[in-house]
Image (cartoon, rainbow, N blue to C red):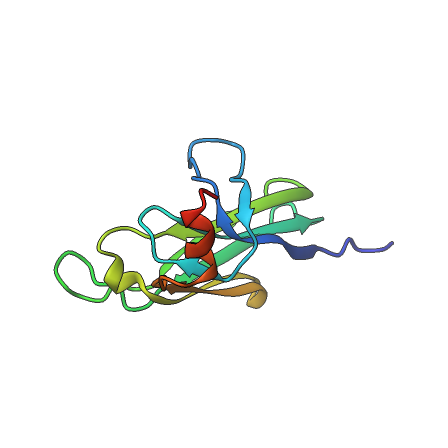
Length: 143
């Protein structure tokens, strides 16, 4: 008898519409990118697609660029776990930029593991926009 083999892949990554944690639907992708402009409430991350993995535990970690807490101490990486709910399942792992922007600039690495094996690993660079950059060019034109 053959054993079912789980399959994991990143189906999208980049900037997303605002995500509602209470909603069953995942956020919609706006832009595929790993360069994230440093703007308040911008949502970024990726969606992991899991096939034939019902019941498996996924451990996730978000490594941030030394973001301090309200007492000025560097916060530990954000981490948690989630269980795959069915055999064709998607999971959104992401974060957002909150004030003050200055201490959120840098690389944000997001990792999902299962049974000690890395399934997904994506690094996003939160960058301060330059006046002549492509994003600023289109933003001035209303896009």
